[in-house]
Length: 493
Ligand code: AMP
Ligand code: ZN
Image (cartoon, rainbow, N blue to C red; front, top):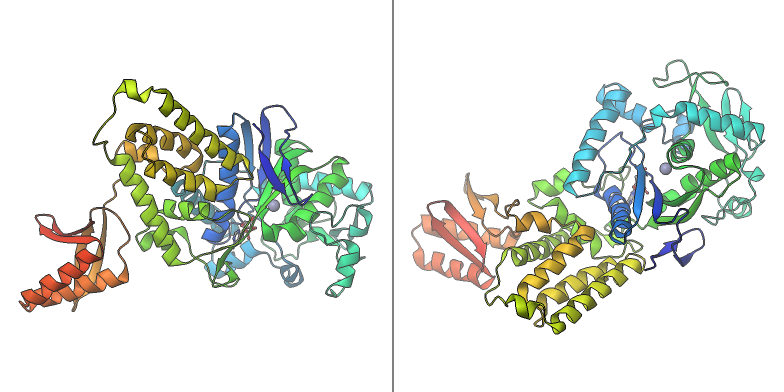
């Protein structure tokens, strides 16, 4: 059993070898809690969750740390403007920075639960690691990697020999690229802030050997990673935009301090896109988990959607693709709920043939996981099992329930009838809204909603020929619309 992963550092798919036998130390760059975490961010957290589940499925013990950035996360522009994102939000919402951070953090925890993302073993908060950051910065100054100017401390990128190894942005390449205006305090244009002097009105500031100030964003992760997992860790994850400068700078800080290798495997997920552009808060082209729920989707449909494309390929988000994922999920749920019509006896179940087929599927599934987290393949195997005419219905269910330990699609809850597939939606008929109960839970398309509205109108006008004709059109689209004591219901044929 060997898990192979694509390592951004070496640009190769490598066999995973743990630092400590049977154990994985993993750090995930977590959310900045100044606003809602969007589904693009969750794509990256779903990758980390899947990674953890694959290791656990394969018998490893994982220690997973996911930080909460509740101060900092300064971009170059923010530094120039002297403002961090949480402070901006505090001003915008007229709340204290702590209130802002705690509110968005609580929504984040709820969303992660809805997506079946297993809670990390610890969620360290940047504001609780200021001392550790200061200690690291002190060491970096002693070792001449960093310098202090006017109450701020910068990292001198020319001092770190391996700078640029992760991202390809070596000093030379940076110099050949876009010119940066040199900040008056910096020795080199690409030096980055470890500590920033705070102006008196700055809301979040701490005492330090260099006067009152606040930390840069990158130092937070270096400090929280080493404090919780030690100087060298197995895996560090993030989205592709974290590669530079965030992770490049983390390496410079952590290796500068400890003189040891910081991370053995760097795993980065590609972005979730909308209309060909990265989903991001600044572009205002993002959706929240509550947005997808409002449209009647189960957040797990988004989890399923993420599995349909490999994490290291871009995924373009569309409502149509989410709808297809919801429908696939419902099919899966209906399969788990359904009973075998011609149940095979226990004796047949034990037959050699069945055992061999089950073993093969188990092997194929495990191989898909180990092959750099090939989720599209894993999903394809699920459907192959469902369609197979060589396996008994209950054996199929057993396999799927086992695989769901990694997929996390709630199949077990479905089996125990803990999730209702029923959804309700409303459509406007004239000035009124009528409620329709969907007893099989699929997303009802706009086309069918329009048919329902048209049919209601015809019924009101007592044009029963027309209403029957529209009912048949709905039937042709695969849905049965009925009237019973529960009101109007629609269900998949
Ligand atoms: P941030 O709060 O901006 O630091 O982002 C949190 C995490 O989400 C980081 O690991 C980012 O790389 C990742 N991320 C940001 N935008 C996207 C996106 N559109 N798709 C996937 N991951 C993203
Ligand atoms: Zn980070």
